[in-house]
Length: 252
Picture 1: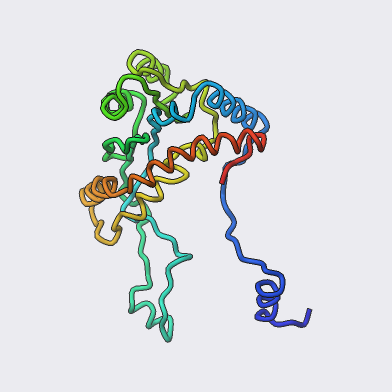
Picture 2 (picture 1 turned 135 degrees about the horizontal axis):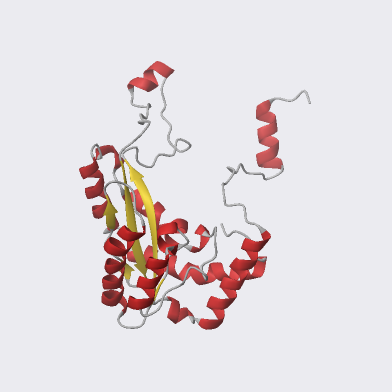
């Protein structure tokens, strides 16, 4: 086109009003999965009021490791040369197989549960039953009283028949494996909000050992603002309506 890169940028930004957007990764949904998501949205909206959903205890698990959470798109340093930049600490080092832990958390309109941390970074159905579900029950009863609902996604330990049996026998109500739609992290308050909030509050620079990682996770969980917790729970109903309106499409 015989035009400079800076001119193209000016035309795109000033003349056309364009902005740059990063590509976003999201699950590829099949027609069957979209249908399942719409069915779930209709079921919840028809059977639960907005007040009822404030009495849900949502749950999720996530891995944290010593490499921390790092976004190289937002981290820059001004220097006169590459060598000078390196001296000023622009290099972010990672290990190939970092030490990691798995964290389980629950959330409801009243706040967050205590975290359950698996130091070896793994959890099967038996450990889920022995170490997570009793904590979920205790926290749910303490924060929500007698009548509340436990939510869990389709992870293998959750779907195990013994886990499902435990939930039937102990929780006042829970979302069974046949109800929760597959491939739907956009419906979990942790995935669309709270894990990011927790990561932002963690001081990754001072985490050098597994013990310090665990301490920082426990400390940062307590710092998540109540308003952000409540907003994440309230957004669940809004997302269900979007799924219903769009025929099961992924919600960003």
